[in-house]
Each structure stands twice: as C-alpha cells, then as structure tokens.
Image (cartoon, rainbow, N blue to C red):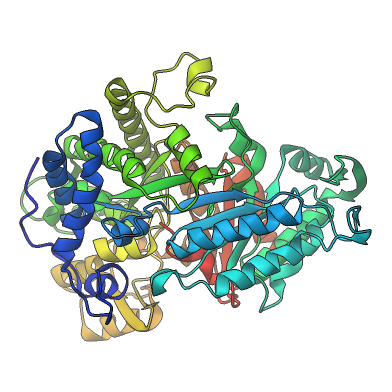
Length: 594
C-alpha cells in the first residue's frame, strides 16, 4: 500500500496555511509538529477504527498516511485539525433542529455553540418558528419571528472563537411559504446583519409551479398549519433576485428535490444544509467529508498540452498526451471510503443526539478538488461540451466505485443501522455501509494545502491574493506560467499584468487557444457555470457546492435566469455572486467549511 516516509512536498502558501491553522501548538502557541507528523497523527487516529472490525490498524495507518502525504486525498479540516487531540471532533457538517419554543430555541443554540467551538459548521431551518406578531398563549404576548432569533444566534457565533482556527459559519434557511419570508429575504441587504450566516430560501415545487403560471401561492403558519394568506410568486421571486443581485444572499435550495433524494425518509425530513449548501442533512445529523485531488490522477502531466488545444500550435513533448489513470483513481476512492467510514467510529461527538444520528446513517461525502487544473492539463476548456462530458464521467466513476466499496465494507462491518425502511431496502438495492457516499465541497483551504484549484470551480483568477488569519497569500497560476515559458510568450510584463488583472483577456501575444483554456470565472457564462454544477450533481448523492460567478455588470434578469435554469437542470440549490457587491457578512458563503 505504499510508504509515507517521503517528505511531503508543499508549496510556500500551503506551509503558511498549515502553520496558521492546522499544525499542533503548545500552550505558548509554538508549533510542535511537522506536516508529515500531522498526517501521521491523523492516519494513526483514524486507523484505530480498523481494530473494531478485525482489521490491522498499522496496515491502514500506512495507506491513509500515504494518500494524504502525497496530497491525493485530504479529509475535511476538523479531521486534520483535531484527530489525535483531546477534543477529537472530526466532522465538518451538522444540522440542528429549531423547534417553536424558547426551550428548543436555546437548547439548539447551546448545542450549536459546542459544534462551532469544535470546528464544525452548522445549518438550521427556522421554518418551524411561528411568524412575527403571532400569538404566544403561554405569556399572552406576541411572537418576534424567526429573523429575531437568527440575530441572537448570529451574536452568539461572533463570540465563539473555535480555537482561532476556523471562523464560525452557519446556514439559516426559511421555507418560501413562511409568512415572514420577505423579511428573511431582505435581512442581509443591511451591511451589519447576520454576518456569521449564509441564508437560503427553501423553495418548493409548488412555488416554482406558481411562478411559472404567474399565480399566487399560500402562506402557512407553522404553529397551526393553517393558510394565513397568499403572495404572488413572481413578487417573492423578484425579492430573492434583488437581494442576491445586491449581496450574494439568499441562495436557493430546492427542498422538495432534496427530500426526493433522501435515502432515509422513514427517519426524518430534510430541512436544512450545512453552511455552504452541499450537504443536506436530517435534524441532528452530521457528515464527514473528504476530497480527492483530480489533477493527481493525470498521467504524463509533463506532456501537456494535448491535441484539443491544437497540436500544431502548441508543441507537445515527446510521448503520448496526458490521460486519466483510472486504476489509481479507483484505488484511492476505495481508500477514501474506508478512511471516512473509520472517521465516524473514532470521532468524539459534542452532542449525543448527533452521534446517534450519524452512526445510524453513517453518511460520508467524497468530493473533488483540482477539477479546473485537470481540465487545463488535459487541454480541455472549462466551458466546453468535452468538459461537461468528462465531469459526468468522473463523478459517475467516483460514486459508482464508492458505492461498491461501501457495499463491500457492509459485508464485513454491517449495513448502516437505519437501513431497514431506507430507499435501499425498499427498492431491493445493494446493501451499503453508508447512506450516502459523495458530496462536492468547496475545499477552500484544503485546495491551498494540496496546491490545486478549489472544488469544481473554474480558475477564479490567474493571480489573486487571499488572506489566511493575519497572512496575505499571493497565488499565481503555475500552469499558465509554465506554458508561457515553454511556448515562448512569457515576459516579466505579462506576469505583472496577470498579477494586476487576474486574466489574459484580450492579450494578443498570448495564443487564442491558450486564452480559451485559461478563461477565468467571470469569463464563463452563468449558463455554463450551472451546466457544470448540474453535470456533477447528476452523479452526486448529496449536493454540490458551486458559485455562479457573475461580472459586476450582470443584471437582475441574469440572476433570475440563473435561478430558473438551476431548477430546470436538476440542481439541488444555487448560489450566485456578482463581482464587487460583497458586503460584510456575505463572504462566509465562500469560506472553508470542508
């Protein structure tokens, strides 16, 4: 299975991130482990689970350490930070229920504080709370509504430091048929409101149908279940568009579609997702995530670029063009499934109810990073039919392989405890160890550690600055610089330009097909952003974190079309972000919650 004794090859930026957030420190904040020791610490802790099933921890410790040390796979940040520490909380994603009582509201707030302190991100649906001005029979007063309690949660999050390693992040969701939906949609137009929240509207199929027909739809008081009025769907939709155009919030989650994909409907109904929207979960459920670095599975990377860019124009090195090493890829998918299943068993859960739910469904979420880099090395433009085809092929391969491995693990370890009554049981499907196996996370800082592009996003910029705690990192695309030097169009002036502007749009001395290959996020149409998300979603168990980037000149109609297209193309949610409109409190949506 390989050895992990070789020194991990890290970029300067990766080392900076590890020193700032991940490597163990003593009581005087002095770093007391190397990156190699960090990966060994994580591998050793996770492999302890093997003993529960008659396996050999030492054997799997080596396999786990090797795949991380060579930066082909990284688990979610809490695992890297906390495995082997006293706290030992290793999951990234949680959803907690918020019931319609003071006891429930503040019990959930207490639980959220424990999760945030441990490094997790938390999602809430506030849809069960009675609307503003509704009656409170126990006191004879009137209710203040869900938004007022979200503000309390936001303030509490502000004072939880999470050990200085990860910023507190929450997702707040409200159903589109809640009477307070307009107040919710508008709340983040104010610069200082809900700065520790992303917010999303839970949009129903009934709403989308009313929107299509330009009709009204009913509002429902969650306390009584009664219809208490109606709104024109178009007016509510326009409010969502206006706020998203101005601030990036709210996003949309298509809640009925999410619940149609719920593998355990007999256990509960999905109400919310984690902070970046890629992980729908049941109340009190958690999930552990990990991401494979796709560019690591391209063989003969030194031979790029291949023929799709133009073999005549862009001279290739000797030998065949780069290809995907599917055998190595599949091997690592299987190791990743085992790794994440082991994480569930060695995890220290901050809340007993979460432990019961997570061990009941054993959800894991394998995702990817380095997608844009893989396309560049293969010579495939991001916004091309070939890229969309490959996206489906790659994600189908990951999910199929991961499910097969989950079934194989179940033969030894048993199916997930809530299997009876699940969709797998009802449909006579193979018996898996895990209710879900794939999720596409944003991989914010993980991609810096692995020195690759983030998640399935296109290249945001060929050069950009990123702040990690108190350190500002300059990231310049190494693939572009290498190609420019090989093909003879590199100059100091060109490098200075991309550092200044972030792209090569309109730079005539850069070959046209190179400009096409290195298109950045704002050069890609919203339709193609959504198409890429839809291609990955088609073969992903959970959901897909993807930002639909728009230039500052984008109109509200552009946002509206994006929302509608995401629904039409089968996405489980959508986030749009118009460049230059960030307000305090919107950037958390794109933070590292993996």
